[in-house]
Image (cartoon, rainbow, N blue to C red; front, top):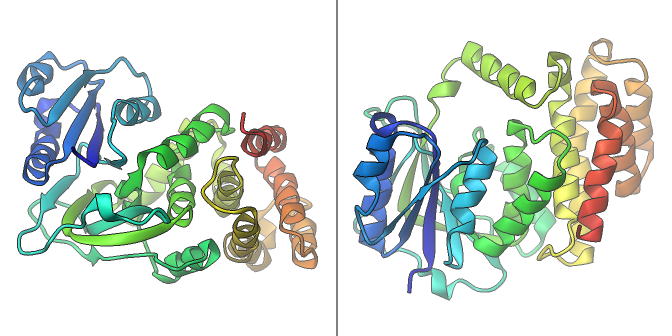
Length: 340
């Protein structure tokens, strides 16, 4: 029985997605894994080429209108204990000479596995590699270790995760998040990394396409696009670290989390220290960039010791980014705490 399904939502046409799908299928055939290809490209040539191509491949003709919906469709169609997302412009390789991790033997307190991650700007050019594991016993220690690793990209989003934990996390996000912003993938990924221990499998080489982030100008343009797509003004970009803290704080406090109440509370305090602390530092370094009252609220955060009260002060600050966000985030955390 297969333990892993690679889940690839794909909107690119046959030509532009071919290398990614081909590499995923080769990996699955070599490792006894499965591939769910959720295709909302509308490309009949692509469907004709891949449908029925391999016993490892399930082709899903998707009518999903958004990338998020197509992603979840691919994961929902899996019936293995573990899933791994893959972008349709990325590549994956099963490395020779290294014994793969047996997912059936992973202890219950592990939520997933990091592959070896290489970032590249062009497929023919090798790029820098990241090998990461987070096996600390406490969730707050895992979060601190992740930030101390100096990760400069979110390639860990494409790690192996327990399917049930992934689905419950994304269900909350997709049903109740105030904006469904594309930049929320950082908070989503780190909430998964901290939900349990993360092992490492260097026999899985994941090549993460960073072409859209090649230059400072492209990075800025892509960030602006993410905010626009989320219905946020460009002026809200300076609140990005605050958004990350609020999203993460809600996600780690959801009903059904693998973490104990005590672990969630410690993790919330650590998130205040690291994530909210970075935003407070931004405000302190350039108070003139922020709307009236932000500086005073930041000082109140520093004077407070209760992490939930500090979260509430964060809500008052995010309201300055766009009126109405505070109430939307209140609904988001109520859904998390009540298990809606």
